[in-house]
Length: 234
Image 1 (cartoon, rainbow, N blue to C red):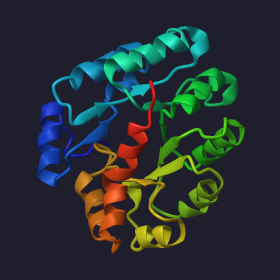
Image 2 (image 1 turned 135 degrees about the vertical axis):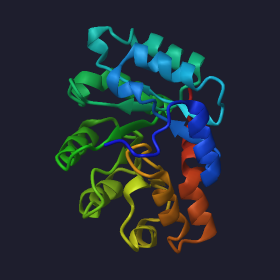
Image 3 (image 1 turned 180 degrees about the horizontal axis):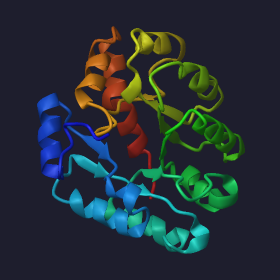
Image 4 (image 1 turned 45 degrees about the horizontal axis):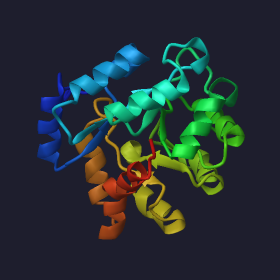
């Protein structure tokens, strides 16, 4: 069920984030799940055109179908639109190297991050298999499917794959931040709200009252993502 704070356009999203003190955000337009492909990607860019603090993302499709053009054409479109991060929404395709091998090789070479929403606990197996066969250096960021018990899934992956990052929208368990940072540091955590699926203020409250050092909070809140996006080469 959508959050009661669902907003109809970019202007109201900016107003909401301004109220919360969120100055910049990487945005996945709602249309990406309904119009997965070029039409949705174009609409995402158009909707955010007048709001430079909202950075658009695109979704990917299997290159074999030709729906997103050739890989060079897709990358050129990203460059022209100022898109520096991608989403995989594997509803109707398999997220693996057989399907996306040539594209993922480009993502590694260009340091383009790929975001993935883990909708179910079973999604961890898909992610584990993908990371095991993907080229070394693939940068991924994943949202969590649940609040409870996720460390048992993602901590082994973070230890094995330094390019994997966890989005903290569901870091809602007391002590979760401190426990993680004490063992692994803050580098692989990216603050996210998962709005409108979650109330954005809740995620912000948990980070600000996590007990971490100011430098660690700043890294998670935006520094890690900013560095990742600055390293993208299109």
